[in-house]
Structure formats: structure tokens, C-alpha cells
Image (cartoon, rainbow, N blue to C red; front, side):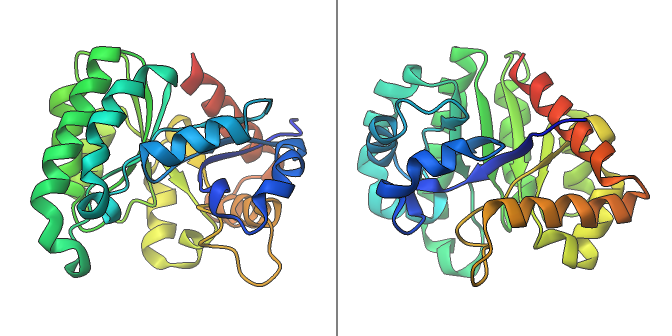
Length: 246
């Protein structure tokens, strides 16, 4: 049994009123990786959460924002050593962001190579509509490092999934994913020791839903899919998170 939930991908700095709520968020029974969208946001988060016990801050360069914030790439590299956690980074090949895909690819590649040089980063990655390209880059540049990869909200095909599994990547599931056929099939395919949970809060939270509500719902739905007891699955995920940190 464990009292702890795991949230490997959320945006705490984007939660309304977080300046006043940050202590409450840290007090929740959730081991959290809070991602950031740019390195300058990471610096602000470092200050806000400097006394947190259960929240880890990741340095990010969100692919949706690369066209606006690519000038911060140098800042990213200069402060990468200040944290073990990296995210949100990745590629987005959807129509809305297709025009920036070239610069996305260039910066994502540079970040991955820098992570490989740092050896033991934990990286949470956005791959929407670019799963093949993202997984290929991650496999190529991280294969000789001790970095660990979490694919956030993965929706790729079976070929990209197989490549990611062969590389030893983890997958983080949120409650929204468990309501779709594709998400349910993904949960069934992921080996028990590669399964993690996320909220992607605040983007997935409806009405008055909290991160605890989201994670509880996710665990319960995945347990039903896998024909397991929710408490057993919750323990499995906590063990996976612990292994991730080793």
C-alpha cells in the first residue's frame, strides 16, 4: 500500500492563483514533476517552489512556443545543469505548428544532445503528430547515456510505440486518455514496469476537478482496463517512479 500518487507531467505554474496555492500543492500526497514551457519560466518556478518537498521542477522549451522563444535556447543550455528534470520539450507536427517544425527539430535535437552529455536527466517529451521523428531522435542521441525518457500523452502508431518500448521509454497516462479507445489500447500494451501517471494540469481539469481527482480517476479507469485492484496499480506506478529516480 502507498499513500502516494504520481504526476510526472503537469504545469503547476499555469494553475490559477498558484502564487498563493503553491504550499497547498506541495502538501498533496502526490510526487510531482512540474514542467515549464521556457527556461525563463523555469527560473521563476525555481524560486516559487524552492522549499517544496514533493515537487520537482523541469526545465522546458515547449515545441508549440519554440517559434516565439527560440532566442532562449542559449539560456536553456546555460542552466540545464541546475536540474535533473527536463520538460516539456519535444516536437509537434500538427497543422497549427507545422510552419515551425524545422526550428522545433533543430532545438529539440540540441537539447537531447546536451542531455546526453549530462548523462542522467529525466525527460518528459511531447510527440504529437511527430512520434516517429521524436522517438528516432531520442533513440539515436540518448542510447549511450543514462537519461530516462517519459513519453507524455503518447498517441503514436504501433511502429513508434514498439520503437519506444525497445528503447526502454516510459509512458505517462492521464485520465482523459483512458476515455478513448486508443488510450485504452495503449494502457493494455504498456508493460507494467513502464507505466506512469500524469495530469497535464491545468489543461485536463474540468470545472472544479483537482489533480487528486484526475489521478484517482486515472488509476481507477486503468485498473478496470487491466483487471487489477486500484491500490495495487497505484503501488506499481509508485514503484516505477521510484525506479525512474534511481
